[in-house]
Image 1 (tube, rainbow, N blue to C red):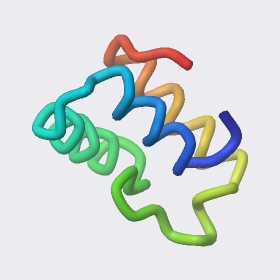
Image 2 (spheres, rainbow, N blue to C red):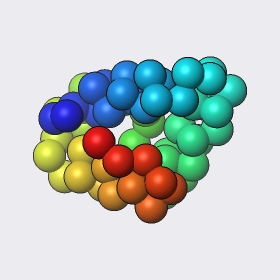
Image 3 (cartoon, helix red, strand yellow):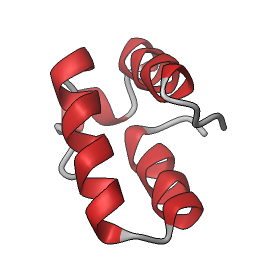
Length: 64
């Protein structure tokens, strides 16, 4: 997964629960400054941002 959008879509599929996705998205935003719900165009395909989000999700138990 090479963009924030694809990470978000993968997380949504794993969770299959919108409330959980929203809660995790908020935690990711607070940890990384990157929104999973509406990523900024400049962050969406930025390798550094994707790496930070993947690491934050891995810390929470979600890997891709």
